[in-house]
Image 1 (cartoon, one colour):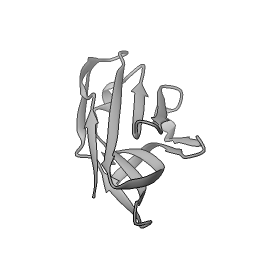
Image 2: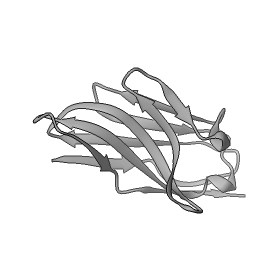
Image 3: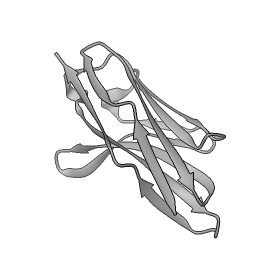
Length: 120
């Protein structure tokens, strides 16, 4: 199977930075798309940022210009660099990967979540 392990969460003051990481392991043929999510009112989870195999990125309006998503295909890892953080960024962040496994089946996998707290 496939496992995603997140790291990098913690406590930071407003205006500070954190970098989240999410590493995939298991019977992976390819990782097609990565996304970072967090809970949001009225939604199960809000898509914060995503990146495709080709490097196309998406950001929710509230983080544009402050967060940067990137991926290291060789390491099977995605990152979320969070700068100029605000108390409203406080949440649990989950990574999700769209994975094609070695038996050529596509499925989605979630990380366990990492808590980010921004103090004012």
